[in-house]
Image 1 (cartoon, rainbow, N blue to C red):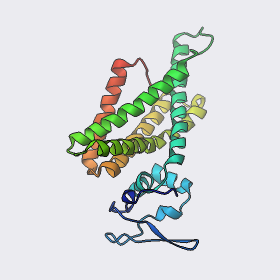
Image 2: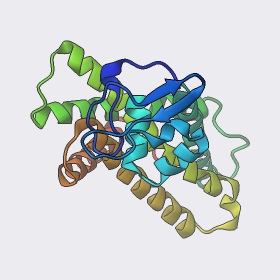
Image 3: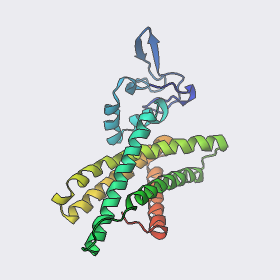
Image 4: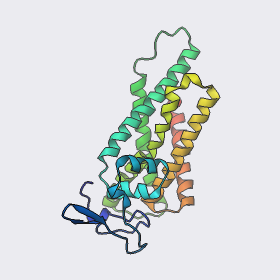
Length: 237
């Protein structure tokens, strides 16, 4: 685990800020208990990344707190890049299928479509993060410039973690020919629903808002993002 500033450590169970998460005796690491909830401050210190990713997919708030506050984020940025490429490839493939259906005589897909899809997804990533920061400020969060910059970075990480839901797009990419249009649409709907739930969980951890407030804000942001993309971008998912 990478070296982190002391003020960024939190208990993964109750969110209380801590000075340390473990004590080291020679080569032995012993986790400490939170003095507020009296439970292990961060059990994930001794866990493998794969187990943490599984808990993230299960929308565990404890795993979100661990990754956002107590762990080096380099591995998760790499996974986020892979997911961005995966989602862009899914979007590009869907566009090509629509164009081929409209024009069966088309010899090949449009050459630059994949790069346009990547740019679209990067823009969506930045737009949603910006809207989440603005939404948090609108809810009464008083931040100076440094605080806003730090929270913006946390929101970027939170949105990257929520994008782990896009792993579920892989089956529809691999076995698209073995399902119907309704089955593919249902699959995408379930992935979107899981993504929204992940966004709510991540936003709750960063902003410390209640579940209802976070859900209303995230759904509003998602609707605003879809409206802006539909209104100003000629890209259909």
